[in-house]
Length: 338
Image 1 (tube, one colour):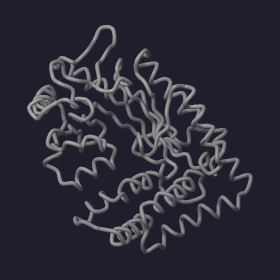
Image 2 (image 1 turned 30 degrees about the horizontal axis):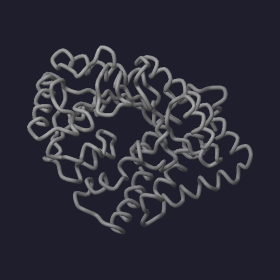
Image 3 (image 1 turned 30 degrees about the vertical axis):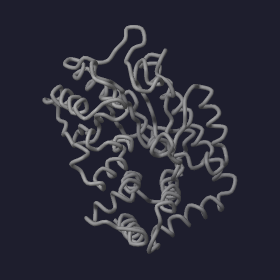
Image 4 (image 1 turned 90 degrees about the vertical axis):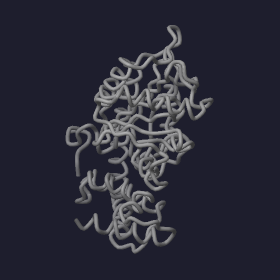
């Protein structure tokens, strides 16, 4: 079993705990009503201005109205767009890079949501990607900006830098031990917040949480990035210590829980999404602790590909209820056998 206390470098970018890092910038076009007050003509002008500014960038425009309901939901499951972008599909779109490291949502809560994603704890790398695209856009686009308040946004909590920094963390040990209440209290005191797998309003399924800043006004971009980086690092250390404590305190109980999860995933003939998330958490923890010979990258791909829309897209048909649960179980067994 890995000795976390002596050698953190066995997991580059703390990938045993941190699934991904995200940096998102909220921006609006000057002279256009914000999306909440915008009619179709304004929405189309917002898309036109943005795509014209990015015409030489390796980004593909996908209009929500041209995608099926299933295709839209797949983008949500892959964290490339938010569910809010789908409220008005005839007025919204996304610019997406092939490697999915960059996505720019058009006409969500703001005209532009520039998002960069990186694996593991890599906030500086994600920030560099996002600010590069922001600089290119700013060369052509006149942003809604106030010299005193900074970037103007629909939600007051985004005014200022317009920057949201987040890390997605897998915290099974802290969750199972009942320590998450303490974690949330500590995070709140720092002006940060913990949310579920799909952000605001979502549940912490699979023991996955997103930590992010609550406000952007009054703090620089560097300060916000450094704050999330530091707190995420502390949570990585905390989670690792509790993992070891659980194993050393009652090794049999912990191994039994993890191996039961593996047994279900290897043999189940149908499995709901809720149960999948619970069992997946066991498998990832077991793999990270060296108790299961499973590839962590494979498990992270499984997390996305076993979601409802992604499953249905893979088979090319709409699956409901038990048919979808059966397909999920088959897919999981196949991945584990590879």
